[in-house]
Image (cartoon, rainbow, N blue to C red; front, top):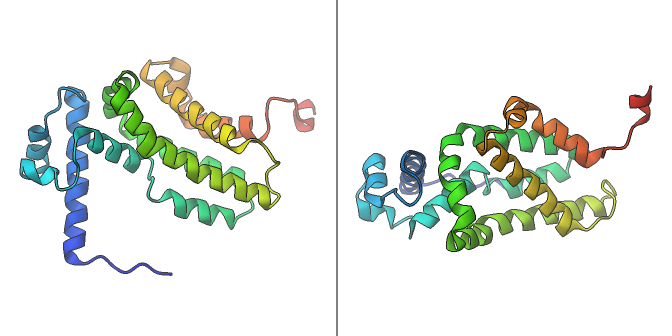
Length: 210
């Protein structure tokens, strides 16, 4: 079913929201999460201070919005539904992972500013988990359960499998922030290597022996 086109008012509202998120990402990257001020974000977005609160209640909400946009969280349900119509789960995994890593790569400076804060700030960490991480977990679990039902993936502990993949993703970001040279040099190869680990494991395959 096709979605109805946005009205002019809705389109302008969406564009303003995106502009605010762009400005917040820039200010967070320049000054860090705690040092960033709403008035600085508003000035860069060319909106009144109060306008930001029409879209986001707090700086925490701005951060969640930025991360959800980077991961394309709103598009993920549609992607997973489309992926179920294809037989190649591996190809979908590689393409989706590569696309999201490229988006995160473009936001490296902002991630360096906010991820360490998220790890040490209990309130920010809890909200990030509840509004972002847990939503992604639920969507990926639904996808894996459906793939198992279709006979494309063997039966496993789905919640744990999903969290292991998520933990690898988080670990990659942390190693990148720490400046690990192997991660930095091999960043473009990460999706294929990770797909090989998940879908093939580390056991020697017949073609490897040959």
